[in-house]
Structure formats: C-alpha cells, structure tokens
Image (cartoon, rainbow, N blue to C red; front, side, top):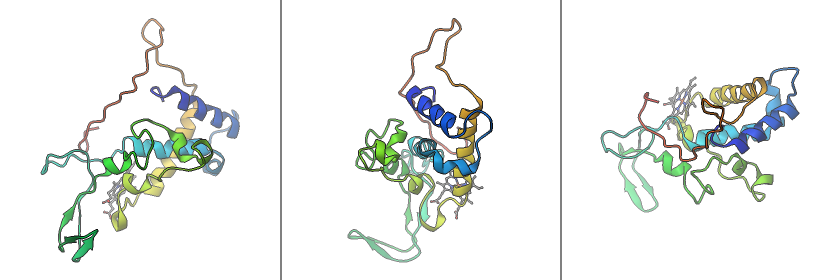
Length: 184
Ligand code: HEM
C-alpha cells in the first residue's frame, strides 16, 4: 500500500463508503466491497507466499511437487506413473498472456467494469496449489486476510511514507521477492 498509493486511496474510499466510521468491517460486507476483494486476489497473485526454492534443481520460484498415480499423456508427452511434476506457479501467476503488466500490482484487473469488461484469471489456482492437493486452508485464508485488509483500512488512515524530516519518500516500485520456505 506504500508502493501503490493509488490503490490505497481507492481501498480507503471503498471502506469509508461501504462500512463508514461507526463500526468495524464484518464478513457480510464482502459482497459490497469489490475493490477489497480484488486487492486480496492481487496480493495472492503478485508475490505468492508459498513459492519454494527448488534446491535439487537449483531452479527459480516454483511450488510443491506432485506425482502422477498412473501413466498419462499430456499434449503428446508420455508421462510415466510416479513421475514428479513441479508446477511453475511464478510463471503461471505472471504470464503476460493471462495478466496485463504482470509485475505491477493492479487490483482492477479482477474488476470487469474497470478492466475493459473482462476480469483476468482468478489466481486461486496457482497461489493455493493444484487439483486434489490444493491448499486445505484457502477459504480460511481468504476470509481472514480479507477481514485484516478491511479492518486495517477501517481503523487507520494511511499516508505516504516520510523520512525523519517529514519529507515524502519516493515510492519504490521495483519490489524484489526472495524465495525459500520459512525465511520470509
Ligand atoms: C496465504 C496463505 C496460504 C497460502 C498462499 C497457501 C498455499 C498453499 C499451497 C500452494 C499449498 C500446496 C498445494 C499443492 O500441493 O498443490 C498448500 C497446501 C496446504 N495448505 Fe495452505 N496456504 C496458506 C495458508 C494455509 C492455512 C491458513 C492452512 C490451514 C488452516 C493451510 C493448510 C494447508 C494444507 C493442510 C495443505 C496440504 C494440502 C494437501 O497436501 O492435501 N494453508 N497451501
């Protein structure tokens, strides 16, 4: 929110309008706050928190390994039973064919009316994993992160970061992720 003040201002305006100043957000407010829902999705997409260094392959950001339980054929490739596949979630969530300006934090990509009439791909698949082993906590996460975001906007006024002398610090847009499990 420090890096993208325009998003912060839109979120704050939505919370002021939907929730007001006399109470805290409730889960029942979710349907009336599309921008907060979009911030949640974009947060999960932009820098997904569960991306693991694949130490064996010394590769880039990926995801948890899965194994095939039967022989299979996918797009002409024969995949033997027991083969290990490691999804490249970073690529999936930053594919420019799915997401315009994928390295930018743009919640509006998930709001059709603000995105040329089309919402971009829901990042639930990818940020929470795949298939039968998809994150068992995803609904709990979606609810608790949503209420944290909403409550933070409801309880605090946000402003630009300032230095010791009160001067606004330039926003740093080139945020760099680091990877590995448990060393955030
Ligand atoms: C932002 C927070 C979270 C993210 C991004 C996340 C993401 C993930 C991912 C990517 C996987 C691997 C899925 C796969 O193998 O394809 C996973 C697995 C799992 N997650 Fe989460 N998770 C989060 C929080 C939680 C929470 C809060 C819980 C429990 C309350 C939870 C419970 C689990 C469980 C039990 C699995 C293993 C599922 C299985 O292997 O069958 N997660 N999660």
